[in-house]
Figure 1 (cartoon, rainbow, N blue to C red):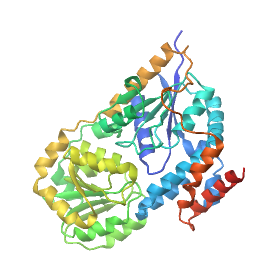
Figure 2: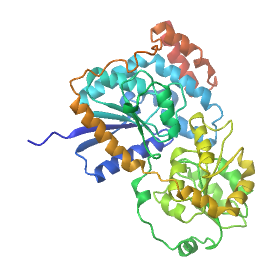
Figure 3: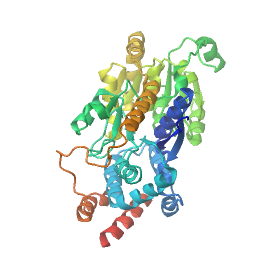
Figure 4: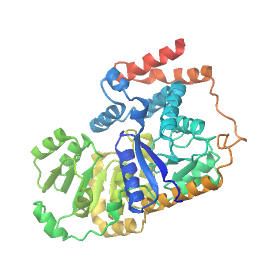
Length: 433
């Protein structure tokens, strides 16, 4: 009799877009490899807030608030707000795990794969309560963790898939053994980025009214663009650019009205990013793991910025660029002219550097998941729910300790923000309880 199909949950959310993109790419590759699994993409926020209470209270869904911040370039306070979010998650731990338990009791997954940070403790414990023999896997979609309690949670008998040596070292430092750390050669990017793409660049550039022989940069700031693109355009008046604005149609319209000495192409949201990268010579953008990885896969050196405005989870990404000589890291986009001059004066050297970086993560991870499932089947008699690292002290989790930790951080949000008001109300209710 044929074995039953395994059900695999890929958990994501839409904050920033990279988590969903990784889930879609992994789902696509699993199907292309014809693995005997039923794959379900699970939006975590739809499980935790199916009636959109957060959105009705604050006027924005959580991911909409985050994406709006990115589009406006309001990233300076995100490090402190991350602490507030984590405090709120601790306060809501019992409620979160209860909702997740009900979901997984109903859906009965054989494997849960998290592609999101911050919620891995709640998801791991909820799955263990109702499906103790189902493995739990966290795939870091950042180049490194941003501890504490961001990607890597200690004291959990789970698997971690890490895309860099730095992330794997962080997992070891958290107490994970080699059997539970799986190191890939990079980040997840879409399978089509590896397909042959033969085009005549000069002819394709001419179709877009670009100079066929002029060095060309592609400027991208995620799926929602960023207002900093206006400053970059002004400072690169004589540089040929392809400007990708994503869903930010207002920004795209504004950039189209700006005059420049060099030819420009402004596009909104597009599924043909690889095509536009093929027409480019270098990449300019924020140090997002997906954008950097896609650019490097297309042999484009990158120009990124690392400063106080860089989100905490993306700061190591800029270090990674420097470690691999994959481009230039600036202190500010005010120096973008100097950065472009440095890249274009040594373009062949930089392109040779990025060509040596071989990222095969999208092909490696399904095989890793298959091995984890097979190991779980062979060891299904062993009780799963136990401390992974009994020699290490377990963090305090009693209500008093949780409230004390939360109170140290929940007052940090701007007093007039909708999110700040909603979190304060929730924290006060817990405090009174």
